[in-house]
Image 1 (spheres, rainbow, N blue to C red):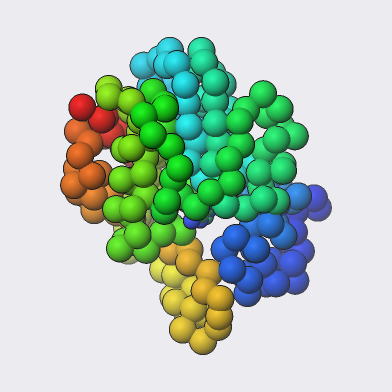
Image 2 (tube, helix red, strand yellow; image 1 turned 135 degrees about the vertical axis):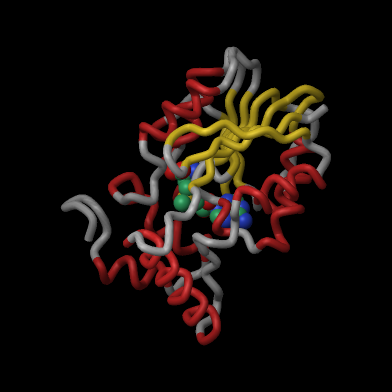
Length: 225
Ligand SMILES: C[S@@+](CC[C@H](N)C(=O)[O-])C[C@H]1O[C@@H](n2cnc3c(N)ncnc32)[C@H](O)[C@@H]1O
């Protein structure tokens, strides 16, 4: 659908009717040929805004490893990716053979005071607002004191733009799909506004800051005191 190497419309429909985990397992071999993979310019802007070097790094919901690329640039020590899709982790291990890859649910991260930098790209829409505290508590636990959690977030365009209506339409379709079909596939574009995310990170114990990376793109920086 997106490029000759990307998934067909039929494949995307089958994936969207699966659970999130199974959907990504199916999509994994073609994921890097979709617009769902975080683009290189966002990865570069994030890496450029972070004051490295760091020692160890964690990519939360790493998928095929977009964030591992950032960690490779910024970390002198070991880098780790965590995701619950075995298919996505298999792709990441091919691209980043030196990274440690852990299969786990980001709502119950299995790390304790292990990392100096954590990043997450393009995954927050998979968590309902009520699930964000569990994710952020887990990242907080995973970081050492002084560690930083960095996460770029897009900001919605105005009412008159095509992208406003496209993203709204996508979320409406997903809400209808989730009302009538099991298992659910949680992916909403409009449930993670920067202000709400900052509030949740603050509630988890982080000192939160934000840097403007580009028009409608903010890097949220959360430091564990
Ligand atoms: C849109 S992809 C983003 C992948 C990568 N971070 C990137 O930017 O290209 C979302 C990823 O989040 C993972 N994911 C979604 N919900 C998860 C959960 N509860 N626990 C762990 N991983 C999850 C999916 O398996 C998928 O690999």
